[in-house]
Image (cartoon, rainbow, N blue to C red; front, top):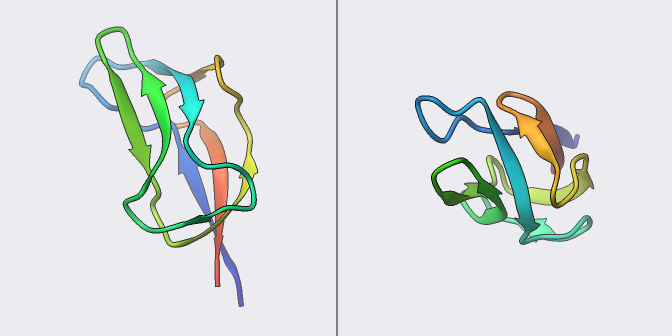
Length: 81
């Protein structure tokens, strides 16, 4: 039975309140492995990569490149078999 994993905007720094999605490194429908970079997020100080929390298929991208997203908000979904 497939399970869905939510990808949330992580808190990449102590003072981070929000992050800007610079670029998606994977597209909807692509396979991802746990720990694989799937997006680049820009904070006030640095641009970092967000890694996949699970192995599966990136099924839904909820936030688009250029959007500013609060920490803790869902940005994508990964479905694992």
